Length: 251
Image 1 (cartoon, rainbow, N blue to C red):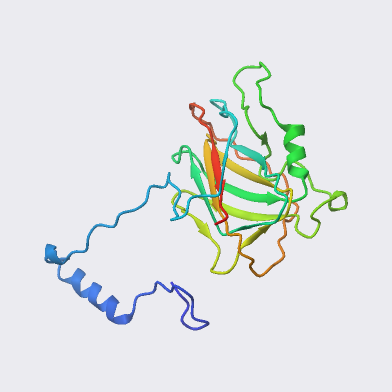
Image 2 (spheres, rainbow, N blue to C red):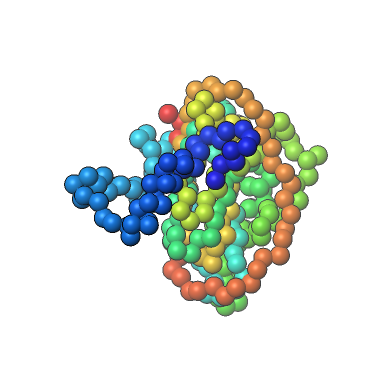
């Protein structure tokens, strides 16, 4: 509820006193049903598995292969890095994450990395094939914990030092698209990568993003050095692997 003693909040959902009185009276009368001909048409919600925008996404990122999750073990934090190979700056207007199995994906975070450090970590720490030691987690990306599985060294950054990285999207069950305010864009530097981190007993996921090439006001972006926390240890159910996908647009 909005705090009425301070600065007014945008999109304030609070009820007016007369609206509260109307609802209270209706409840006191036993919640009678109104005239059905006065009822509004049912709201038609878009599927959470579809890109939610009138314009198609400019870029869709897909896993090269399915990820295999062990049937039991700790919560799995998987970081997947998509190198963009962009020669120019990109301005992102809108992003959307689409889970492959929304029943088991706890959350997902998407960032851009202008330094190349996370892509190198994926090459160094990735486990695309099983080691042959029983039921294992393996596939695209690498297991990172809640951080990046390494501590970035600012002194080692060779490119995009003024725009090393920032958050682009965050998703939890029930969330839809994430769109910047009118006239504002997220600035992705040249030769950047997109990284998605998913926490789930079954990280089978998708991302979709939408941008705009019009020149917005420039604002600095930053990415704080992460820490590697100890994950919780609930049992994980067996599940079939499924590809992940993602997208960005510039219309």
